[in-house]
Amino acid sequence: MTDWIADERRYLVQNYGRQPVVLERGEGTRVWDADGNEYLDFVGGLAVNVLGHAHPVVAEALAKQARTLIHTSNLYYTEPMIELAKLLVENSALDRVFFCNSGAEAIEAAIKLARRWGHDTKNGAHEVIATLDGFHGRTMGALGATGTARYREPFEPLAPGYVHVPWNDIDAIKAATNPKTVAVLLEPIQGEGGVNMPTPGYLQAIRAWCDEQGILLILDEVQTGVGRTGTLWAYEQEGIEPDIMALAKGLAGGVPIGAMLAKEAIAAHLVPGDHGTTFGANPLATATGLATLNYVIEQQLPARAAKASDHLQSRLRSLEDRFEEVTEVRGRGLLLALAFSKDIAVEVVTQCRQRGLLVNNVRPNAIRLMPPLNVTDDEIDRACDIIEAALTAVLAPAK
Ligand SMILES: Cc1ncc(COP(=O)(O)O)c(C=O)c1O
Image 1 (cartoon, helix red, strand yellow):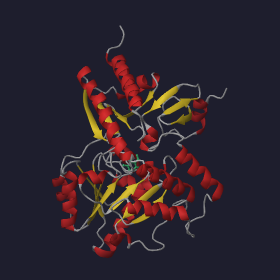
Image 2 (cartoon, helix red, strand yellow; image 1 turned 135 degrees about the horizontal axis):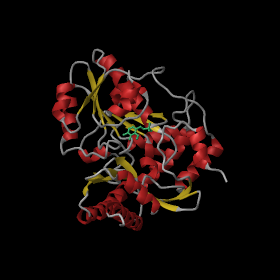
Image 3 (cartoon, helix red, strand yellow; image 1 turned 90 degrees about the vertical axis):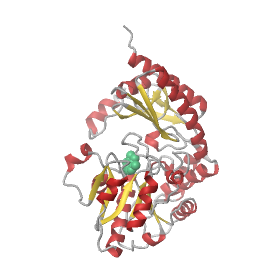
Image 4 (spheres, helix red, strand yellow; image 1 turned 135 degrees about the vertical axis):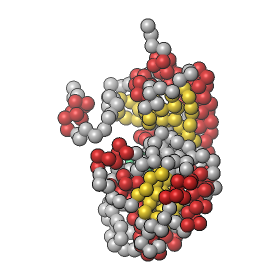
């Protein structure tokens, strides 16, 4: 029998710390490994699988498009990209869409657009203010914006033009603003940084400051978008609108896609020849995105995610009463973290996996839960029973 893990270690670049499971197939919130073990998947492909695994809407759109037209290049028009762009524009505060293939690329496009706008209208303003612990991707530009030293330092020098300020500190943004500033870039909720919530009023204060200074607000909704936080876009719950928004992850239900959305007056600054990517707007990705996003909207899955979140949060909060080491439940919608007073997240993830639940150790002292938006209450109950058993095993080991 093939030892897949040994072969992975032999043939792939060893840049990921993978869990020791070979996943073979999935259905809804469940996945099975090569040995036939079943797991509840509360990682959801890192907030990608908004409809769960093998959803017929995703699978059929993908198969139908694969039989019709997979790739053309951006030298031509295709229907799915136009339909998906229209759906995004009609269901957001933004006016125009650029498609790419990942979150990092959506950020790169957002930064290039902001700089082009600064070049044309603000005397060459180009500096971007981003937040510490913010995560925007691993390409050199997106990494420049990412606010975690250990991701950045081994790859320096990075592209210049980024300033990092502490999260939830509006005064730091004000102090960092200067005539060279073109934009503030941040996530509405910091995802990879540990599911860190904005303090009430923080995002509104940034919006007001950007308006006052005539600079752009770029929201990175790569993780929070497509219903994840209980509304289609997280900014809706903050009563603000971004000038530019980056999307990826859940947009095509698991097929690689990214999108940069912008207000009309800003988008107009990118002209033919300024930017592009071979696979961007690919019919396979955009047709699947169209089917996924239509389904998310028609089935009101953001509202379902909010309701599921209430149930999941109340179950997680009961663990706070049961274990004194459980210190916090944070997040919104189905982007939640359970935090501990000790660095036990790796052990909790292992104990959960051994009991049939996949969760992610987003911080040494916190696990992150990102199930599909259509997760059932019964699945939430089973997941929480497993987390409770895992915590019991980690915190009260058998003598
Ligand atoms: C908020 C945010 N922005 C950007 C990215 C980068 O996306 P990708 O990994 O698709 O390049 C991520 C990935 O986790 C993310 O969470």
